[in-house]
Image (tube, rainbow, N blue to C red; front, side, top):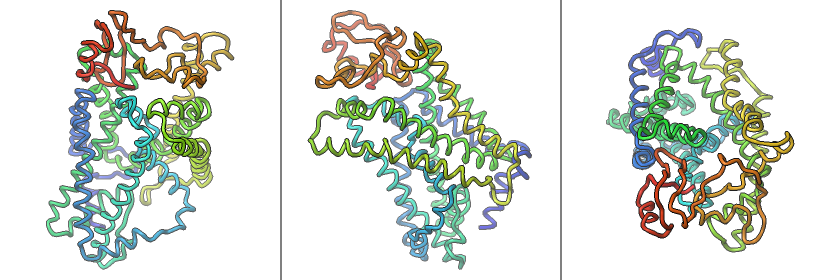
Length: 482
């Protein structure tokens, strides 16, 4: 494994002495980065229509490869020792705050729970989609996949330990070391090594491409929804916005393909993603359960999935204890414990200079979560009217026309089966109002909806049940159920 580490560090990465020794761009890594963003752009060029087709492959193919690697791994000599090592818990690591932080960040990242990905992708579902069932299946499938992948990986590492005569703990690694050092070296010792290495790295590419697509689509949708004028600028050229975003992100990724790239990757992995996602997730929990109100959320769920049995309703109300108390407590616990037990970041024996860690690292963290704080005064000053108290109260209430796009799904706006459920703002500026589809009028106002090219333009519409309504159902660019 030492030779593999030397090959990666010296010949592939050509790692410099530290983060302040940038060195030059590694041209082959730069081309790989360019290829990745080019593939991402090509998958995004037609918006959600092209993403849907690509995601079928990026979501299913890794499972196929994982199953193949699992059955190959468990048939190798020494696989049992690797699985035993995998199943044997080391409870002492629970006293390490970084383990809690990494575990929480991994769950947030793998579920795309606090970076907008779930919101964007799910916004294309039908309004009546069983979101409750999705919320149960996705975490179970996610964690189940991680556990299953552990068997595939550690069975192969057990084989490597058997071949080298070492203990499994000596050949196991984590993070970048596992994906690019330990596991590839184990594959290189198997019969037909080039084939297995090809499968493994193709799987990594498809996993990365899937994450890239959701990331860019989240940014595209956020910009188009928050700044409707952008839709007019790119009208007829919907590929332009994804192209600009991919180009900017490619440029921002160039430091990772320099000779100091490994140090930049470790710094951003520790600060730019983990801590900020935890804080964003905590903010979402507080806003949804305590400001919007969990009762309103449950009634919204009933509007979407319909009335169920009394037992189901009891279960639904019972699990609200998780977002109200358990989840916020756990996130706060992880954050406090991590800050209390904070230790400087290290890459091997390398210690970061003070300007990079913690100063630059914490700047990365607050660079994202700081937008929440900065948006508050902007919203109060430019988006609300009245005195400060009135503006503050109104900003904590949903708008009067908050709800689904389609009129027939707007049962939850003000009442639910005769009960008043949501206190709304009465005075709503026109810019906030969603257009109401009126079957009696011939002209439907322009609407900007989620997604690439998903815009309802001025068009004639005689009735919702007429010819144009049928055309809308057959036209994927007409509207989106949100």
